[in-house]
Image 1 (cartoon, rainbow, N blue to C red):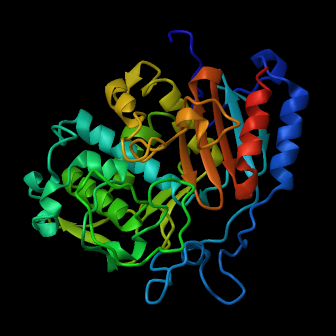
Image 2 (image 1 turned 30 degrees about the vertical axis):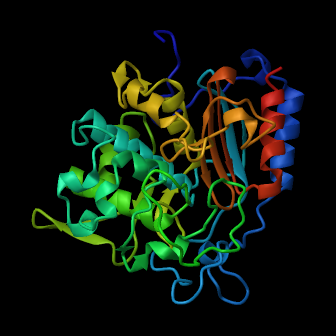
Length: 374
């Protein structure tokens, strides 16, 4: 890695596709395909009947169908393809700090890695209750929840966070990415932690809250200091919580970020900054000689969970090619509604960021980019 290229702050080398071993014609066709398949989500992010797309998309019912955090209009299709650390293709406004929905969850996964590296989390299999953060893990059921369970979305944690009960996302994508949401919000009997995978934003926000308590500061500040500044990211990104998501820590009011834009807030970031994070993962957490996140943790992050082999620690996996059949089986994905994809593909030496792509066409776009590698 001594000769590896790392883009400096405020700049990023670009090369012709042929110089990176890619087909220029195939990449051009992929870019045209991306621009021709804009997301169907409204640019205002509000439907004609006034409903917010973040809650309408997953079928939230009153009183949980209104945003409680900031919502900003979206941009258009945008993306960047990086090979060998250098840009080989781009489209749209890749410098725009846009909302990114559940791709923010993957950044929570990285924050947990820093907490592990710092010794704030002694073992991923420790019970969260043993850290005495608050009374949220005091019940007999919640006492069995570990950090690993929270990171793998198998915790079955029960309670409310910022006014949202865990039951609001019961039966959401239960078991796999492809599961339907017809029973979402239907109260069900909880199972032992670690046995059931469920895409539950309340529990993700519970993890963000726990990490904020460990660090004694906002995850926005931790991300900026420990990751974004060292990798040369822009100053235009921000990570926000809900209007009521604040803690008093050591006499200070601290905002607790959300794991996406389900109820507003979340991570507002450019495609270029996303790509730097994807490159950091592809380089094993190392950036210009500094180990920002340990390789040991990143190996754990990319390990398939037993309850859902397509999921690691808040990052999606393409185990067996089940998530995206047209892409290689290795690598990790940050995914957000709308659709947003950050793809780090080691076998192809690729980092790809795709924003506002119509969901049914995401796999085909990934396949076109992968095929351009020859």
